[in-house]
Image 1 (tube, rainbow, N blue to C red):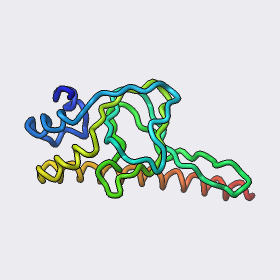
Image 2: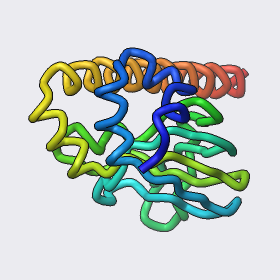
Image 3: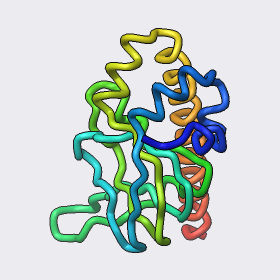
Image 4: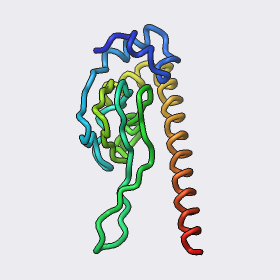
Length: 161
């Protein structure tokens, strides 16, 4: 459990009242990761939704270029203090869709996925707010991915001349 005063520091938690924050706090724990630690990889069961207290995390996907070449790691987004990640914890099939690598020593608040989904089912108002916030995270991540793809496509066209 973490104090609700800590949760109130995050934009992700601004929409919740104190009763809802107390329920969320009961599911939360603080975790630390050293720089270079891979928190999870694409395809892992989504065990937590995370709020970043300190540090920097790269979200990436491996791009396979063929059977005789090693995969190329493509950065999709960079997550820093105050942001959230791990939306797969509340979206079926509850599997992470990207890898997460800490590039700095990192401290997070982790919400247990099973407990969070149960709470969302029991408290529909809270669950609706969580899903609205998760939709914003997904939308932002999609926008960042589009920017990266357009940038890479532009570079490949420039290299042809």
